[in-house]
Every structure is written in structure tokens, then in C-alpha cells.
Amino acid sequence: MEIVFTEIKTQSLKLIETVQKQSPLLARFFSGQVVIQFLNLLNGFLLLRWLSIENVAIFSMLFGIQTLMNSMSDLGFSGSIIALTGNRYSHKKILGGYISSAKQLRRIFFLIIILIMAGLAPFLLKNNFENNTFAWLGFIPVVASVYWQADCSIYASPLIIHKQLKAYYKPQILTSVLRILINYILYLTNVISALSVLIINALVILYMGKQNKKNASNYFEENIKAKETKREMLRYLAPIMPSNIFNSFFGQIQIFIIAYFGSITNIAEVGALGRLSQLFLLLSAFNMMIVEPAIAKTDHNSLFKKYIFIAIAALFISFFITWSAYSFPDIYLWVLGNKYSHLDKQLVWLIAAAGVNFLSTTIWTMSSARKWVFWWGTAFYITTVILCQLCGILTFNLATTTGVLQLSLLTAIGILIVQLSITIVGFQKEKRLHQNLSFQKI
Image (cartoon, rainbow, N blue to C red):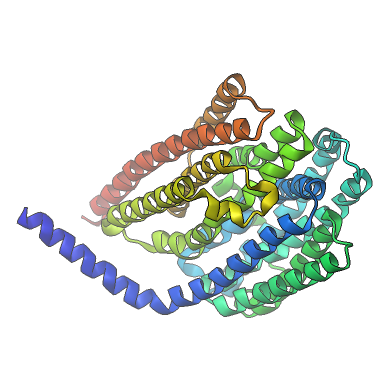
């Protein structure tokens, strides 16, 4: 027992020392990220009050399509820059090569997804909206946003790697404030609509992309010939690319299913509740900004303890937020407005699914940082999701908001099982690699 307490004390002291070393970075992260997430949440919740039920439905549908197109255009290219660069981030040419590769690959997949969406659009917008013209015109700012998002995502990587969080957050905070003010003016003049909101969002993305590129220009060389780095990026992402493609569609499955089976009101309800799941966005950003680089740089001896600590922390946070939604639903529903105050039961299903997804995302962030990427993991993931979806279709009433959210929770649990399996195999791989390196030194 004394040995256990000694170990706990040692690890606690190491944790305190690590936090003290990283406190300036953590302070910049939380001050920037909290402000941005608050402003984005505020804008989203205000839009639920300012827009009609139909406009909320149109916006939710088109924003889901925009998110799908973003995911399909990127497929992990932007995120892989940090992992592939590793401790070579000070070499401008190397970092520039990965940036060039990500830009070229994203451009190719952007063109592919436009062709795919041209065929899917009639299916996704089968509901007869009163403002059907606005719904179709909304595709213009959606496509523009996806194209401009490339600069936002790709040029953010050098800023994150070099811990230039002020330069990373400042444009986001400025545009978030302006977006709220412009939407409020449009609301007061009674001309606000789903189309106007999408246009403003597109212009915000354009500005942020230009600022990220400008602020990151000192950390990489431009226009590097990226044939070799492109191959390396594709090799790294190849095992998970099928799951990324699959997940691009699955990530928006809630809104697409309810759009097909349900009514315009159901689309608005799912879209409104989806805003509450953004409570986990701050934590997901923490994974990308802090957890991923930390795990990537961790040595073998301390990896397991750090991995378990972060996973348990994510589990506790998910449980606490889900419990609060169950115990105090009125607090959550108040921010949605009177039009959605009847969704107390649906709220719990949504938050529970979002919590499980956050835990899965945290585990995956750590696994990908260690390059635990396996072909069998991709197959296992896709198979599990399809089986969960089939079980849900046979079990739940997907013409209702509750049925769609229950399906989401079932699928989230399946995904968590997959990520835990990848983690177990990843640690076995790490152990074998460490043993081989030790043997070679001998």
C-alpha cells in the first residue's frame, strides 16, 4: 500500500510540474478558445431565436452539407501536418512541403465532392420549403466556404506548432464579434434568413484564411515541390482514409436521416439540439491544441500513465455534462428559446451521445498522435457503424427527433468500442517497437 501511495505522489508531483511549465500556453489557449467558443455558441443560440423554424431547418440542412463537404475535401490532410512534421517543425522547407501537399490534395478532393453533392442535393433537399429558392441559393456560399476553409485549416498548423496562439485566435475573435453584430442588424431590419447567415459565414472564413496565411508566412517556405511529401502524407492517411470518407457522411447522419424521414419541424429540432453538443467543442479543440502535440512528444516510459490520465479525465467530463443535462434540463433548454423548450427528454439523448463521442475523439486523438493507424481498424470502424445503423433503423422510430438521437447514442457506443480496441493494439505495437530499439542498442 505504501508503494502505491508513493507512486501516486510521484505522478502528482510530475503532473504539477508539467502544468507549471505549460501554464503560459494553457492560459493563452483557454483565454482564446473560451472567448471564441462563447461567441460562436452565443451566435448560434441567438440565431435559433432570430430565425423562423423553417429558416433554422434550411440552415441546419445546408450547414450539415457544408460540414460534409469540408470533411470530404480535407480527409485529414490539414491535421496530418502536425503529426508528420513532428520535431522538425523549425525546418521551413519541410513544413512548407507538407503544407503544399495538403493544399494540392485538398484541391483535388474538393472538386470530387462538388460532383458528388450535385447528385445528392435533390435527395437532401426533398422537403418542400416555402423558401425553396433560398434553400437552393444557399449552396453558393456553402461551396465558397468549403473552398476558403482550406487556407483556414492548413495555415493554422504552423501557428499551432510554433505556439503562436495570439495570432491564431485574434482574427477568429474579431470576426465572431462582427458576425453577431451583423446578424443582429439583419434581425432588427427583419431581413435575416438562412441565406444571409451562410453568406456572412463564408466571408468570415475568407478573412480568417487570409489572416492565417499572413501570420504563418514566417514559419514555412511556399510553393515547395511536394511529390515525396504528398506520397508520405497519402501513405500515412491511407489506412484511415476509408473511415474518414465514411465518417464525413456519418458525421451528418442525424440531420440527413431526419431530413428524409421527418418533417421540417423535426429538422429544426435536431439542428437546434445539435447546437448544445457544441459544449464539447472547447474540449475537442483542447485535444488538437494541447493533447495531440503532448502525446506525440511523450517518451515510451511515461506514455501509458499520461494516456490513461487523459482518458479518465475525458470520461469524467462526459459523465458530468450528461448528468447535468439529466438533472437540470431547463438550464440547457433556456438558451434554445421557447420554440424548443419541450425537448427535455431529447436533450439527454443528445448530450449522452455527444459525451461518448468526445471520449472516443480524445482516445483517437492520442492514438493518431502515436501513428497507431491500422487498416483493420478502418474496416472494424465502418463495419461497426453500419451494424449500429441497421440495428437502429430496425429498432427506433426515425421519423421522430428522439429516435434519431437514440440511434446516434447507439452508434457512438459502437465507435468507442472500436477506438478502445485500436488503443490496446497500439500499445502492443509500441511495446514491441521499444523492445526492438532496446535490443539494437545492446
